[in-house]
Length: 285
Length: 328
Image 1 (cartoon, rainbow over the protein chains, first blue to last red):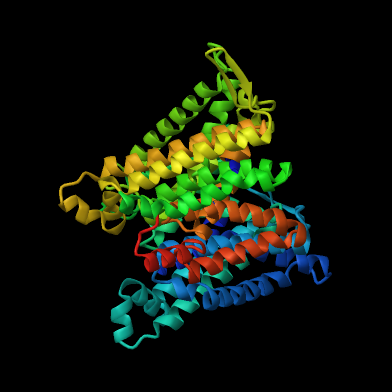
Image 2: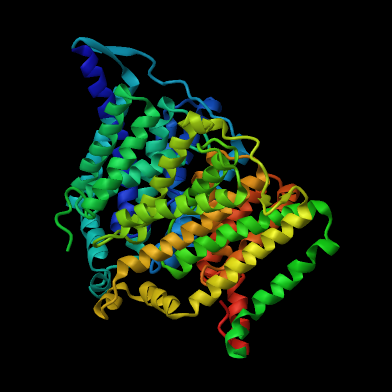
């Protein structure tokens, strides 16, 4: 019984982390139509901020605050220097951000070397839950991820900014005519998406191996869960993350991790092919 | 007749220079050129699919890798019946790549089909899947790959010749690349090329005119895959080594950069893009060390934003406009 609970907990934590990564992607892709191939690298930079604060002796916790600020600012620069010029060329955003991801990856290699870094787990204890023990820090990450997901939904569905952002997305020209500053809102959406990636990276860093090549391992599952769930409705990212992350986590316990990933990718491809608008997206027009 | 040959003039000019190259290049550079020719062939395959077919495939290396492994297993005699002829290997490689592209193409394009960003992400996933599979397929060398793949060999009609030396190999590869390039250029000037342009421009309008989209998309996807498979097959005979990196994500990225930097809508520019980028890499990776990859990434960004048609294609098409010809 407790074995099953541990597997379920692992799956849940996997799902929450994936959704956290996919949230930033969703804001940038689902809302702005920009395919950000450098999102995995933004996540990676968040993780390296945690490495840096750990090494410099400040400790891990400040990175939770610093990482989103640094990565958000980086997002601001990227939007101003790069993305802004190619909003009307969606396919070129793939190429340009791909170039960006290569440059960022190599910058990290130059700064930190190609080897993987490890961060000591900040809350190094286990708590006993009903019938089994679980690492405390992973529980904290899960709780935090859930809070962050909830916060995002709240911002985009309940606040004024969220309303404007959604208006700019669905009717960019109409919104502009109505006097919304679409440029500014797009810019803020990109910064928000980047900051979320940085935050997720810093938070997850102690539980994973941090290396320059890690970005892709989060980008592709993130994108697949986005597409599987459907980009339109916000709940899509939850469903997609649950489907991709959950299947992967459960399969890993039964078959090898490599085989699990291959199967999950294949399943995701079939789902996306069958339902191009995602599980929640309704019938395609 | 002259009007039809005129657009091919730059191609002839480039290949005449290449023809003379071994007379003024050292042996080392000729063997480097052999690699460039194969990479250029690979770049052509992506230019056909992406620049002419309008299908942004981020997994073109899948077909290169399939061709490479097909050639390797056949010429190493790992397939029964034991036939190790180079020519059969090449045919087998092209066949398998086209078959894979056909099946994947039906999956991706049938019905309403997958397009744009969705297609790009799905092709990445496909490449990652293949890379994982090859890394764990121990019968095909797994992560360590296959070693000691024999060079290209002619063994028929009593002639036996192995392409060990760089210069004969260079002329063989040069002729292959030339034939492929010119055939593609001629093909793209026919009605088929016009249909492809219509497909890129507005797929739905083409449907209204009564054309079937699927065969058109499938054909160009398979054509590109076949060329990629040929390039992969030739590559393993040069390198003597096939590994999962040939099928994977990194090579897909690289070919994308060559083609984007050169120019995806002019075949000659895509080919030269591969040459120039590889050549620059030879020099600059020594000069700048690890900074080179960063520079390449930045260059790629700049080129996409400022010169979406490509760094070589932009001046080439300008030249074409001056001469009132359409360079392909």
